[in-house]
Structures are given as C-alpha cells and as structure tokens.
Amino acid sequence: MIRLAVTRPALGSLSKAQARLRSVTADEAGFAPLTMMLGVTLVVIPVLLLVLTIPTWLERSVDARDAAANAARALATANTWAAGTTAADQTVTELISGDGLNPNDVKVSYAGSLNPGATVTATVTVELPAGVIPGIGHYGTIRYTATSTQHIDSYKGDNGQA
Image (cartoon, rainbow, N blue to C red; front, side, top):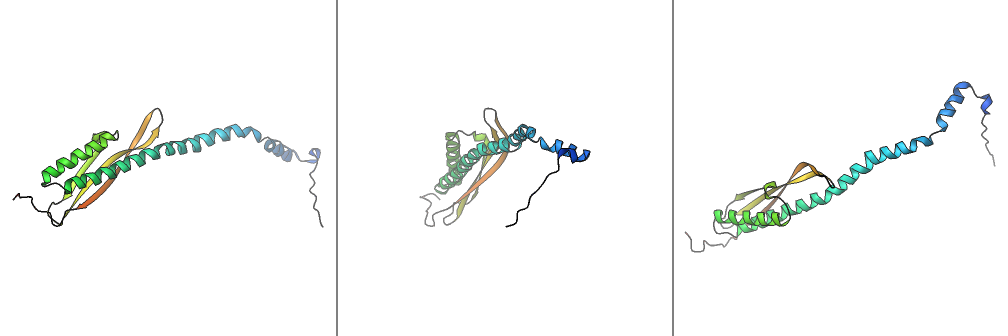
C-alpha cells in the first residue's frame, strides 16, 4: 500500500505573496451572514410570494371555468337568445359574487345559436393578481379565459312559439 504524504511549507518559508494570499482566503467565515441575507432576499422571499399566489390563481381559474359552464348551460336551455343571455349573465354574477369576486373584474361573451342541433359557447375572462403580498395586497393582473360549449338539444321544439 502506497501512502502519499502532503507536506506544507512552514509559514516562514512562504513568499510574501503566498503568505498574503493565504491570510486573505483563510478567513471565509465572515461571509456567512452576507450569504444568508442574499439567499433569503433573492431566493426564499420570491419563492414564498409565488407559493402564496398559486392558490389565488387556482381559485379564480376554477371560478372562471364554473361560470363559463353554468352560463353556457343557462343559455342552452333558454327559449330565446335574449332570455338566455339574461339568465346566463345572472348565473355568472351570482357565482362570481358568491365567491367574493368583483363582477367588474369578469368579462362574459356568448356565441352560437339556439337552433336545434347547434351549439352555444360562453367565454368568461377573469382578472387574476400577478402576485400577492400578505397584509399589503396584490400587484399586477393576468387575464384567464375559460370557455364552455353546450349542444342544443336536436329535438328541441319551439314550445309553441313561432
């Protein structure tokens, strides 16, 4: 078995430049507080803010999908387009208000036709906060759009209306 021994020269035998370099790099323990502060500031806090924002994104995206599905269903079961859009708007307003959102932050549009066999589509756009700072509020906005399409019953009659 061969053992290699590493020997270091004594401090007195080092050149002045080597001694100065060794004395500068020997005290690295003083950088720990600075590293900790930079790590918390540049990594932990942004990740924490992102983690606190994700539930809001999920909640509002689910609200938009539910509102679009319910609005399309209300529109598809109506007898006239005007009655359908009124019922769909009311459904969206109730759902959004019930979840604590401002109805002004929601945009709704409808497309399609109520002819038997056709389809109707409800599109709901909700504004999401880009980020949330606890105790302060949110900053920035992102728009999330959900769409739902419903098929009109192929055998739907006009219910006696001409």
